[in-house]
Image 1: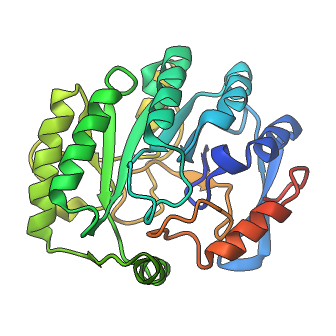
Image 2 (image 1 turned 180 degrees about the vertical axis):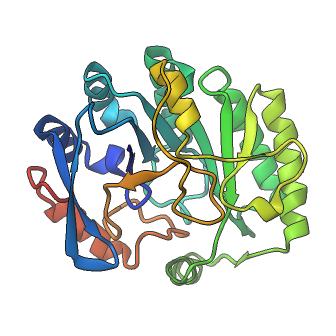
Length: 290
């Protein structure tokens, strides 16, 4: 199996010690987010795990753990979001230049195939109109030249948690946001695709195949093919995504919702940002369950 760590929370930024201990122990417990009484135990051994996909906004504190993962013979991919949004949208994420520098370090140490840049979610607001995105994406793409060969984008999906968090942030900081029609999204995709190509990147769209335009591929964020290239051998992971609109390989996620303290205004994984910060402060790095 492929282990996802994690699209439910930012394990590399905030829970690296916990993950390292679970790796050393050789197993991890995972709670079903829809049934708290259902807890599974997963082996974290080379015999059980084909590789890891790490999702993060800040890989810097996780660099020593990546060394450990590699030393144990596991291939991995770092799916790293870098946006450069205003602080009213991204209240606590690492500055873009620091994130970019860390990704270059990962690429230099482990190879650029281990790095995927995520520019998502693309949020339309009066702080981040289409022209803002073109400027920000273009600058970031150039700064990441050589560190990766792929940029993944997606547009904000307005889940109930997202709508609640966005409404609170908009009221607190005095901005307006919108969810434009598909034609506006496709127009921006076309512009971003050209900028990505100019920087030597392939642009891929995550989980929204109805918006695909020429020169934009469908993203497989849990990418068995990329992991196989990193590993230098074929993997056994099945193409069985967790969403119908997703092109990912099958994976098991070991994170927990409502535990990321980043406080991003558009977050889909946190109901109450303050409660998530309390959960982070109170977590036990030695526990088998995050």
